[in-house]
Every structure is written in structure tokens, then in C-alpha cells.
Image 1: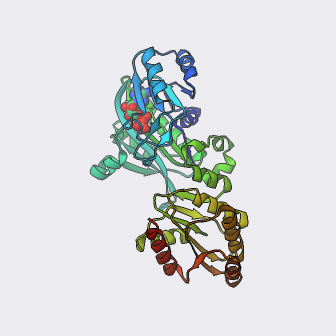
Image 2: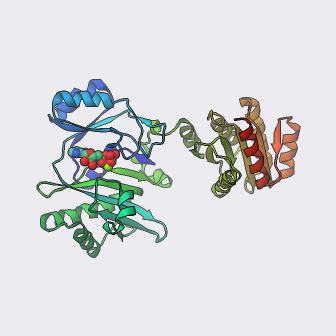
Image 3: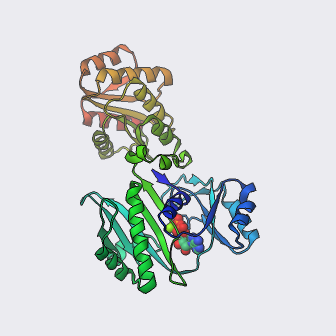
Length: 389
Ligand code: ADP
Ligand code: MG
């Protein structure tokens, strides 16, 4: 789950990581009060959205007078922001951060993530901050240093010294840098981080280090023990279908094709999407109804798939293991009655109670196109989606 920059900074501050003081505003009428309580006459105003690259998209503005702060904050509130990470539809900015300006001497990059291959958290640092790290990785990979740290959030002195040398942090800045990195590693692990990016981490004219930006995403599977973070969930930052799926505990990701997919199991869902692509189609979504889905969940899934106007055909691909095919069939029949499915529906069922499931579908008189196997299903759904263009 992603959280906003201001929420991440609240967490970082608890770990003693220096961040400029800020206020967050969601209503235009609160802007002046925020400026007063912050006590500034110049500030940076930043949209709070779940995506990076805000600066380039016009979502970060520097204002040098009180009037300019008010004007820019007003402009950004409610603005639609399209960045590389939001997709073409963009997201609406419902909150802006008004923050103290920093006196930037140098910008660095720091990122923390889980390195699955080595089963350890990984720290990545670069003296090339502020820019896109992907570009640094591609063009000048030697400017990125990677070091693992402990799963308990600890990092040893040797690793810290290595980081300081790489970043050229010496004396007072070196000492501050070690504390900064140490606290960052601790904050990452203690909050079940999946990814934490400080881009840029800056050094000011006095050699003091600050987290100027913070992008934090937390492991969904750990939210049960992170009640405070769970509260930070912001549905306005996801697409409408994804929000319903989240509430129903369904794994759903919207994509830009026209074939709706309903599959059980993430692996089978990936394979189904691959086959659709292979046969010249484009999936409209990834949807894993899960191993033990019931009739209601299947019906709800149909609702989510159909609420995407781009969907021209649906492929149901179920391998009944724990999940019984007759239960799936019942869910399909219920949904079809309730939702009046008008697009072609291709169904491939296999596994537990498959005969009973097929029998139910046949009896229902629904116009379902049955598929014999996965390839047959993919070919049929692509043909139907393409013919209804
Ligand atoms: P994003 O990464 O989404 O574009 P950032 O918070 O990194 O957003 O801001 C983009 C750039 O704006 C920074 O690299 C920095 O140059 C400038 N900036 C951000 N916050 C401040 C601040 N408090 N003071 C001065 N400049 C800032
Ligand atoms: Mg940034």
C-alpha cells in the first residue's frame, strides 16, 4: 500500500530523520491559516498524490511571497496530475503540502527495498539525486551503491562507512549521514516497508542532511499489525474498480485492454493474460478471485469487470482445486441474471465438480461459449473481442 509524502514524513520524523516543517491542506479556505502557523513568507507547494515525478508534471511549485503561496496552493488543489507513474488518466490532487524551503547545496538519492533474491533488505544510494534513478541505473550504473542490511533493521558500521565514502560525506556531514541511514533502515523494517525512496535527500549550505521527498509503500500483508498505517489508505488514489476489489479482498489490477479476465490463482491469471496476448488480444485486467472464493465473490468480480466500459468480452478461467466448479458456475449464473451481461462470455472450467458446473451452466440457458482448454479459450475470447470493435 502506498502512503502520501506527508504521511511518510510523519513516520520519518518519529525516527529522528530531519524533514522541513510543513502543513497539509485539503480546503482552499485553510491555506492562509496553514501559512500563518508555519510562519513562512516563502514555501514549496507540493501535490500529495501516490506517484513520483510530480515536479516534472507541474505538481511542485516554489513561491517567494505569501500571495504566491496562496495562489499556487489554490491552483494545485483539485488539479489533475499526469505523471509517468499515474498512467494517462492521471490522479486528482485532494491535498497539498505547504513546506519550508530548503537551501539546497547538493541532491542525493537513497532507496530501500526488499531484495527477494537474497532474502534481505537492500539499501541503494547515489550521489546523483533529484533526477530519475532509472536513468542513472541505465547510463551510469557505477554511480549507484548497493548494500544489504539486517532483517531486524540494523546496519553495521562497515556498511555505513562505505556509504559515506561513496556519497563523499565527511566530518560533520559524515556523522549525520550515518545516523540518517541507520534511522532510515530502522524505520523501513519497523514499518514493514516494501519500498522507501528519499529522492532527493539533500545537503544544505551548512552541510546538514534532510529528507526533501519521501515515497513509502508498505507491505499489504503486514497491515494487520500496522493499524496506524492501515488508516492512511487513500481510495482516491486508485481507480474505482480497484477500490471495490480492495474492499472485497480481491486481487484486481486494471489494465488497458478489452478482455475481462476472471481467474483463480495468481499464476493461472498471469498465464491466462500471457495466452491472450500471444493470440493477439489485450487483457482489461488482472483478477485473481482467490482459492476459496464463494458465489458472492464471483458475482462481485463480474460486477467489477463489467464496470470497465472497455471490456468487449470476458474470459472465465477456473481450475477447481479448493474452489469447486459448481460454486463458480452458480456465481456466474447469479451475476449474469443480476448484471445482464451483454458481452460474449467464454468459460473454461476444469477440476473439482467440473461436470456439475458445466451442467449448471447448460441448464441456465445463458449464452455461454464453452472452451475445451486454455488455448481454445484464449483464441475464442480474442476472436470475440476483436469482432466487436
Ligand atoms: P517529485 O519527486 O515527485 O518530483 P520532489 O519532492 O522530489 O517531488 O520535488 C521535486 C524537486 O523540487 C526536488 O528535487 C527539489 O529540487 C525541489 N524541492 C522539493 N521540495 C523542496 C523544498 N522543500 N525546498 C526547495 N526545493 C524543493
Ligand atoms: Mg522526488
